[in-house]
Image (cartoon, rainbow, N blue to C red; front, top):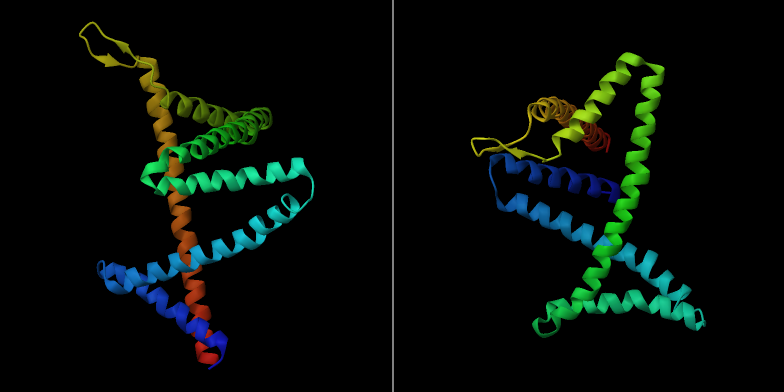
Length: 212
């Protein structure tokens, strides 16, 4: 039996082990999950070491320039501080690295959201209105109502109840409808994609096994 056939049989058996979850949580399903997580963790570690850490060390710490070496040492220092969070006595030192990561990550996410999502969305909406009035109106209505749905401004009524105004509730309900339709379409597309990939892989495995 060749290595390709061994790989095909292994993939087929692991697929059946995963689908055994349909009968309930069992040892075979957990074993397949452990194998997948272990392989994924090992692969990510190998790629990180060979593709990130080693090139970074060669380009910074081994560059021979003091400024570059200092910049290259900072991530290593932050990484060591993060490891100290596992030690109860020194876990507060790891908060420095965590605060730096959260701050930088928040800034990057904010800039990416504005430049990569909001601005293109505004431009696409404006182009849709200009090219097709009817579809553009639906898009603008969906965007506006969805944004209103996610705002939580409310006021206190004479009876003491805190609730949104009639206009806010109306547009929010329309926005909720757009969200439900969108999530339904995405969920349906994900199911169809998964079934297509599964049927293709099963057919491929059966063809290779039968031909081998």
